[in-house]
Image (tube, rainbow, N blue to C red; front, side, top):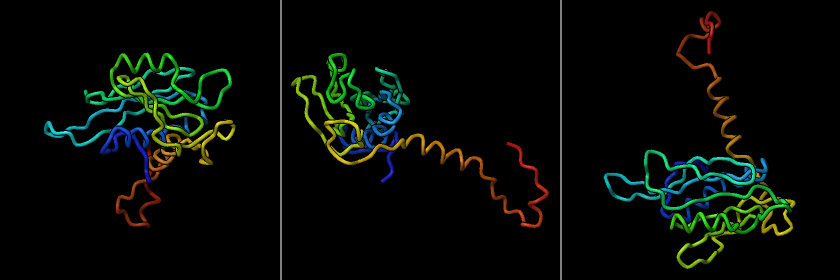
Length: 183
């Protein structure tokens, strides 16, 4: 399955899980927090589903990226990077909870242990959505054996490779050697 910002999902939780599959491995490998908005996707005023914005990245905290095109914010999601003994990794920090309660929208956290957590600002309860996100092999509380991959970087490299390919202009092979490509 492909994971990417802008994909459409039936629920906020499904969008959050996709975000975790796409960004949590990158967050662990880079040892950086990442964060995005979950937003409504409407067409002609009618709700079509939910998606998430491309992530911002920060060292030990992160500002959540805004929804594109003025779409309505309906939740936040972020990660805590790798398993680091100096920081709270596998649960929402006090600052996380304060932010979620201020927005009055559910917040999600992708943890180094592989959990996707959801915090409800009304009930003030945290629940586990899933435990099958990419996880840090050095996390003592690791929930699975799904090794992290930096999917955003891999997709970026693939896109660059595609852009650097010489275009096929339907030119006969015998004439192609006389073309000087300029990028």
